[in-house]
Image (cartoon, rainbow, N blue to C red):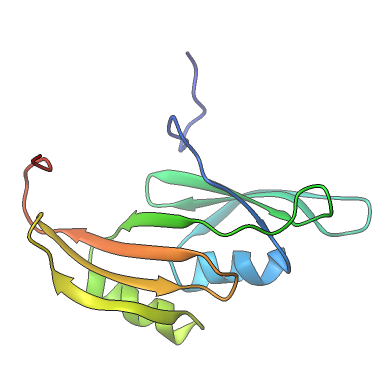
Length: 131
C-alpha cells in the first residue's frame, strides 16, 4: 500500500463554510503549512492540504452536497501551553485549560470558529498509553 508523503493511514478532511478563514486558522493558530491548493471554477476552495507536524489534513468549502460538519482532533505539539495560547489568540474558544493528565499527556482543548474541537497535547512521558 502506498501512502503519499506527510499522510497517514487516516487523514481528516474538513468541509467548512469560509474555508479560507479555516485554512488561516490552521496555519496561524496551529502552526500548519499549506502544501497543495486547488480551487473550483467559482474561486472557492476545492481542496487545500495543510501539514500539521507529521500529518496532513484536507479542507474544502462546504456545499449543499457536502455541508459543514464538525469533528474533534487530537493534535500533538511540542509545547501545549504555547500552542494553546496561539490558538486562543487566533479566535479559538477554551474547552479545557492545559493540565497534566494521568495518561501522560499535558493537554488542553479549544473549539475553533467552525465548531471543531482540538485536543492540544504534549506527551510528557516517553511511553505508550496503557490500558
